[in-house]
Length: 617
Image: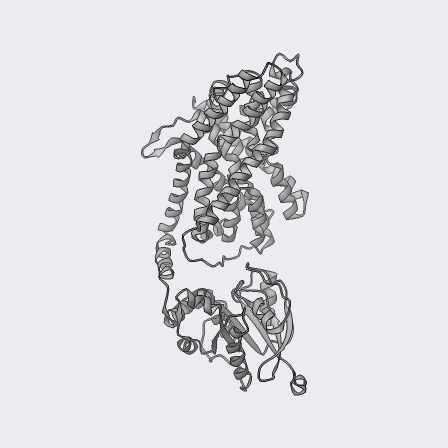
């Protein structure tokens, strides 16, 4: 750096743009700074300053700002970026480098137009232009400059050669008296997002001379799946098909696994001498773990559909479709992704709520996430539906699949209604609009798909081999001893369950259910194993007859329906409660979730039981 250059006051330049467009990468490349670089929104959480000298010897004080989408900030990070640009925190920058991912010109150009409307001097930088070109995108840079009235330059922030054109354009702009000043307008108000979106699409269409077929196909498909009328029906149809297939496709594999578990129990019983070891293996391990493992095919089918929807790019569209509906009930459409994740497991769903900027919106999402029907509930639902709902057709549809769909919908509707109440009481706050990017559609990568599916299936089997196995062994001991016990009620398990039985009897639950609900707090599907162990220990049925047949003779239909209603709401998972505590930083909210969910479960089960009895079921 020359002495003359160091004597000149540095020009303040701000890097702005949407999250994940490459600002921090460009900052590091120009300044040698150490700003955090990551391929997810929110990597930059504060302003960072760095110095560099242009090829013409001009000093630059470069400011790396958090990502933001426009002039209506939705978080502290976005407010920080906007206030820096407007000069509310310090001297306003003399020039803005507005980074735009070249591949998402239609989406990101609207924030450039909003900045132009406030008169901010800037250079528009089409970053990752080489990747967009590689994929077949062709942009007329001269036409884009003419439409915007601003200088435009292409760049590849990751390479020194990819930054040379930007530095040359920067020197040219700094040599002028008015640094890259925007045209005088008139323009829509900076906060008029809709007007700027329309103008951004017009300018992008004029500047893009050729677009890859999959980009055009994406927009053509979106005109259908994002239609305000057809879109929600398509989404409902996809979810309905998913639940139908869970039963239709899994029937054969489930029967095979069920028969295999029964045959294994009979084999062990026939080849081991009478005694506690045989009873433990047959009635504890095989009956407990086997009664859960048989539902693995249904878990695999459910996750197959979810992974396909995620990998194809449709899941983001589902969030977009749900935004208006959720907004009416006080929720941000961004909450749809955490809630949808909760269909797999509430724990990652609750953790995914971190993407919600508003603390009150985030709290509401965390509190209702357990109402989403997680995969751990599926073994419970599958057992009861398979035992008490006939496998017959209702028109073109499977009755068992219809009941499963109804249970999922009940959880969703309940979550939305409770969110409506919370947003007007304990979590009162103004809801914020959803701004998100919609990826292009693509075929799922086969390798990634099968790895993800294997991870989820393995996690289910791991729980069966650890949590469920452990609780089954403990429960077997409590149900089988003392040796003098002539009935379940006289066993240790019966004595413990007897403490809860008077409380649960008004909603139709028997002693076996009371016993199973206690270990079921470890994980929801443990209740299935617990029921299998309890009924096996006390000889309710032979090993060759499955648990479903045992329950058919031991329970009434109102009790079975009440049990299903209980599991729609009950917080039968200590890990979920611990995650709520960690994410909210308070046991108060974990305790609140435990209390309100148990209250809902009790009320729903009681209402279902007595309504079913009154109807003569």
